[in-house]
Length: 294
Length: 238
Ligand SMILES: Nc1ncnc2c1ncn2[C@@H]1O[C@H](COP(=O)(O)OP(=O)(O)OP(=O)(O)O)[C@@H](O)[C@H]1O
Ligand SMILES: [Mg+2]
Image (tube, rainbow over all chains, first blue to last red; front, top):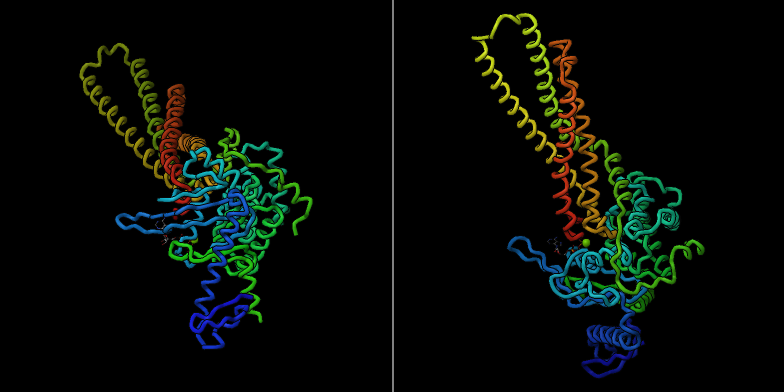
């Protein structure tokens, strides 16, 4: 319930969001309501800033810009993105094609350098890291999942999963055991020695999920993980990610077009033209869904 | 549903990341295993890549085999000539001509060797270049998983040497074998007349050239790919 004051006649209406027209003077209340929602959002964010240490944000981006230069033409893909991502949350990044989701994904994952601004992972400024530290970060801290799976084609499922462990310097026995465990976790315990081409798309993506967990990362970054999967298989991957998020507390950041993702997300960041358009919270989403249901 | 005890084993709850560290490894043993796997697994593809090497080295070796065989025959004929007509005195009038012809043949030989080296270089460079470019995405992926640039280079270095060695060996044996057969058809006893020490040396040199060429053809593009930001390597379409 929210109290809304009509800008035309001053009438105060208590509403759950269903009433959008002032019962007194018939003025449209939607703009006011949107503004209130926006303010509430801000308030919540400020409250968070105060009540928790900044370290609660596992990822922060500051004024992130990315401009691609194509010969003479400059294509701005990100135009000042500031997002704070909380530890342990399931965050979806949505937006139309070309809005800059993958670009943001690349910046946060340390796969490309921003043209301006910076990105902090656990308060470490990525721009300050050297090649070794960056590799360490990619290896140990972040797990990546791609739309196209990106498994190494000549390696078996198990070898794919253990590759990041080799880089992390894990012993061979430990590696094999953990690799098998991870594949079992994603439901591929029987497929350890299959090559990617012997697996279905959904199974390949499961291997990728297992691989992303190889070194027990703090963050899983997924760029359209369901983009190449059918509805049902996509749903399974989403559920798997959600389960991981809940059970291990790993932060999941996923760029997606997939509306099914919204159901499991704690927050949804909407991006348009390289800028954050709005941020939706779980609570608001529930409200919307509830309202629609009535 | 995730089995609880499985989950507990996998997520170490005590994970404390602390400082960003920099310890990332790829032991040579693992690098070699990965590279070897790559060559073996892609054998079909590697054969096509390797064909450039095989052909180049086969050409080179065949030229050298012809040279050694011809020299053997010449030596043999010279000996028999001497044995027959020892007292015919100085082989006065023909000597000049023979010498000129000898020189012309040497020049032709050199030209053939240079040509075949060029054929090898072009074939090998081209095929290794192809095999690296079609794996940009894989390189990007490896970097996402934490590979340092030098790991990528290391893997391609080993791979190109292994591939270079296999390709050159096949090429050398083929080129040598075929040319030898040609000479045997011409003069059946040629094998006994040849200087096998020299022949072996040439084959070893051919192997070295094949490996070296495939190395210098593969490593610079692999280096370039390794130095690209992973996002760019991943986005490369071939
Ligand atoms: N390597 C590149 N070179 C030039 N322009 C690029 C490059 N990568 C992305 N862009 C441009 O940047 C903008 C954002 O692209 P991005 O891939 O981030 O979009 P996206 O939101 O991921 O879209 P999609 O949903 O289709 O994957 C687009 O206009 C795109 O053309
Ligand atoms: Mg994208």
